Amino acid sequence: MSITKNILKAKAKQLAKQGMKKLILWLVGAVGAPTLIITGVVLLLFIIIYGAVASSEEGPDSIAVSMKPQYEEKVAEVNPNNGEPKSTRADLERKHFLKWGTILAIDFFRAQIENKEEVECKVDELAPELAPEYTYEKSTIVTVTKRKVTKTDPETGEESTHWETDRDVDDVYLLVKAETYRGVYEYEYERVTTRHSSPTRKVTKTRDKLSGTNYIPDWSTFDEVLRRELHVDKVTMDERTIILEAGLGFTEQEQHFDWLLGNYRQPGAVLAECPEEYRELFLEAGEKYGVPWYVLMALAKTESSFQPDKIGDENYTGELAEGLMQFLPSTWAEYGIDANNDGEANPFDPADAIYSAAYYLSELGWEENEREALYGYNHSWQYVDNVQELADQYHDQKVLGSGGYYYFPVDWDGWWVTAHFGADRGDHTHTGVDIAAPSGTPLRAVIGGTVKISASDRALNNIGGRELWLLGDDGNNYYYAHLSRYATSDGQKVNASQVVGYVGSTGRSTGPHLHFGLIIPSQGSHWINPGYLFDGLI
Image (cartoon, rainbow, N blue to C red; front, side, top):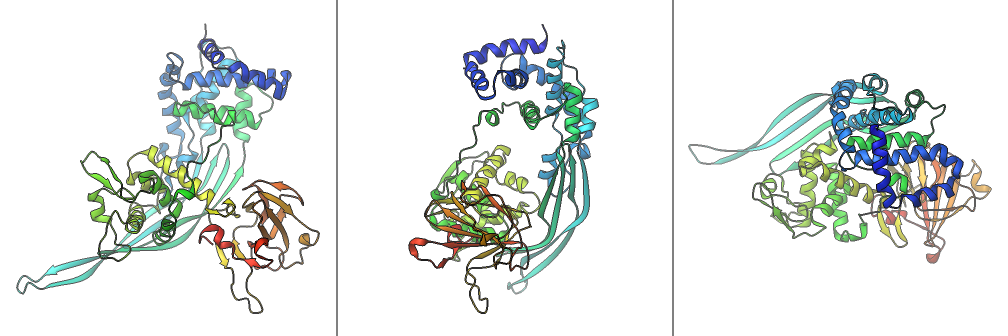
């Protein structure tokens, strides 16, 4: 009996015990028997083959394990720079590398479809077809370091201090384009200078910071490989997903069924659990040292659950981590900061701990490589993944408002405020907040509610150009102006975070941005500063 038949037989028995019959019946009811026969069989094969290979059961998983070296070696050869990141954004390069499990998944499905006794390894042929190509640009990182030096006169015993300056210029590469089987990813950078200091050291660093991305989807190469290898006329996105998820499972030796069963991540990070008095500290420290506030908040959640007096477990050196951000004494001695100027750098003081964590991450190279910096904070890649997942959740939630969690309206991390609420406009004061972002950037509902678009709202000669109102379920009215186009219609019910329109520059405008306003009917018909919704972010 073939390898795949063994897998099918063993896994089918197990899945039957686990209620797979219910899933099959559900599929029949949802898509109909004919469709299930055509596409559902492939789906079932995916569940059986992939689930078996990715699991730790005796037998099937050894197939993937035994074949891994051959696939892994060839894929490493065809990836740019033999799979070794070259640029300042190693995380981006790794993201686009071809995964060996993807090739293995194609080979497994082909073997089953062709009813082959053995899996034919075609990694030598397929890997070069699907490998990415990177384009780099040369740049530099300029670091100027001033160190305070104290000297004692051997004759008089008097001490004197002075600052010594070092200037280092490092040649680096920037990843500007990644051409992959998913499409083309283009990356833009801006030159920035950051400064941070301690009592004995001042550092100024000038580098290129990622400022924008552009993704151009193109699945033609991948689809052509699947059509040829799996003998199909047309490839759907669902079929791509099956192959890619199977490949991910092979690569990581884990099962990835959540996408199929609809089990999406539930928030594990809730902003309300962060003490109110810490939030401003996270914002200020993050701004000073160039580390996002939500990353610092995620660190505090992970390290101590916001307990400022926590003592950690003994580490391999015998030291005990201390305080809100769980610094080891030896690390604190070098990076601890007296942020509140009370004369003592104390790891159990929340202000000192938060500022010191931000400073430490900046020293670990946060600007150059965020994941490497987090790894330096606590040497575990699982830790890095956990912190980044929590940070994403905090970032998505923003802050707790009177009606629940409000989502930020502009879906672009590079946004900036060009005009605050109440700014003097000569004959009037600004009634909202202007948030700049590239034209076409999605705009999201800050909360669930009903969209209101009148005929006059569509007129481009309005001051606000294309505009809409979101009548929030919390009773507040939210105003979006200068849209390039709508993603909703008048009277449409929307959920929180749903796209309602896109950034534009219609009406009286000097560039693409969102004018975001707020009226709270229970307090009258006057404009309210919407900044309070987002805890000082705008």
